Image (tube, rainbow, N blue to C red; front, side, top):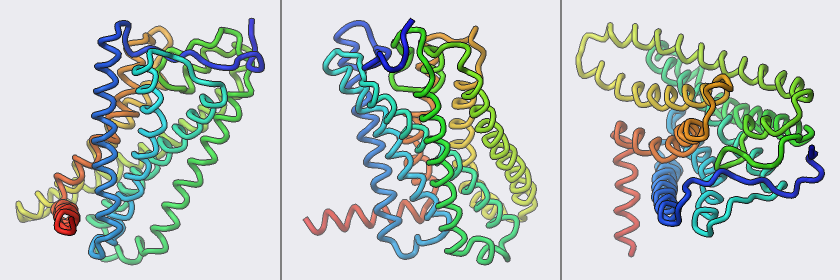
Length: 310
């Protein structure tokens, strides 16, 4: 039996057993990281520099890009470092910091996806009230509420998780520090408080999910009444990417946290974690930029302007 005060580090799950596969995983993670950094960086720069993109939809997209950068920079660099140098350790404080920032960015992303759904709902279902319901002050307040509530949620979970006594060693079955994996190491009798926090967080997440579903039902009802095919195509082109991103993110994250222990296995846990922590930051810029002509034009203008200066 051990406790948290006697543990100086945790052992992370190795992505591969052989040196060749470790280097291959390093290259893959490097490619994904560079794609995420480039794509999200371009979106942030284009929205910040393009005056015509200073609208609620692009303001929330800029915030989403910031969370994507934060989440991938929290988990992937350590996994790359471990693969390159053939190690699997992370310090106790490093694990706590990684868990906090991962929960902070991933929760903020979830809240932002919900707010972006509200933005789409108002613009399509209540266009005459768009300026009133989504003014600049209202958008700033909603974004600030998303970041602040995510910060409190991450702080609450991290402080509680790392106050639990650990009875089952220090080996985590994941390539980064994650709540379910640390809970597996804690003493069974101490789970009740964290279980309460998880139920509260899941209740909030379920409320957001119901809101997203309800909003899209209303959106699609209105869109299908649009007489012109061009109008329907434009509405669907802005809504379907958001729905695809939200569905992938929510379904994999919820399943990862709520699946029964009997279904848990290192390969399944690893696949799920990659789907909700690594794939969305790399895919979000591609999905949004390809489906939005204004953003595509702004990114192109930004890139050609940089090349012309050089």
